[in-house]
Length: 306
Ligand code: FAD
Image (cartoon, rainbow, N blue to C red; front, side, top):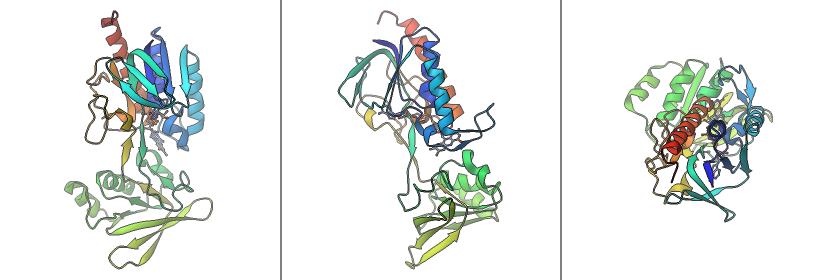
């Protein structure tokens, strides 16, 4: 068995694996797709000490760094089940991997609108992370899709940077906290439209130029000209496979962890976007991976005869 088996090969998992291997622990990492969300990212300008990079480049560097160490990398394999009693992970292909400790770092995915143009212009105007991509739209007009807390927070955040923000909410009211709604309504460069069903992201073949929506009251189709669309309709943790494992999950399906990345199950740690950590960013996921790994080390030196 491994000393530490990491599930997930994004920034959290890669960092956890490196920290574990540097402790001389027998370390494995199993990932459905090494790199995780970073592989889908274009410009990255907030990975501190690296002024600007690109997702695929950072993924290659992560992989290179992991391979500096004696880590078993099992890529293109999905974990299907956690057996917490035996600290075993069963993969989709039926194989079972055993480990004295586990670090779960299966990340999250942004909920998509599933309208024409969304996939096509992802990274070319369609964005999901205001902290990441907001500055790319400085002085331009953007839309935020979704009037929940994350959508309204995004609108308030973006209003400081961009020329104008249009918020489109499908329902007839905003679901965000009152204090956020009031703040957004007070901003002169934010327009809020409710009852708006976004139907298409429109572009010129290279980048976004606008979007179409249906006014659900009048059934009329409307067009808004803009340079960017921030989709804020939910971040879904990749934890469906853990539902019956005995692991504590929040009401959003996030793995509940403490300051050391420990879960409610002994020897099982977690890190990154799959957890209850309030902010989802590369640099934060890497820090959390390091914490969880040191947490696992701490656990192992106390339970060496388990
Ligand atoms: P992820 O990156 O989601 O990695 C999860 C890993 O787990 C993957 O390897 C995945 O294949 C694997 N996995 C999932 N389920 C299973 C399973 N059942 N079995 C095995 N493996 C599994 N953050 C920034 O800081 N700056 C940015 O500029 C930035 N831009 C972004 C742009 C986009 C388009 C997106 C989508 C995100 C962006 N983010 C950015 C957010 C950042 O990518 C995430 O916060 C970060 O990747 C989270 O790392 P993670 O390791 O927790 O999870």
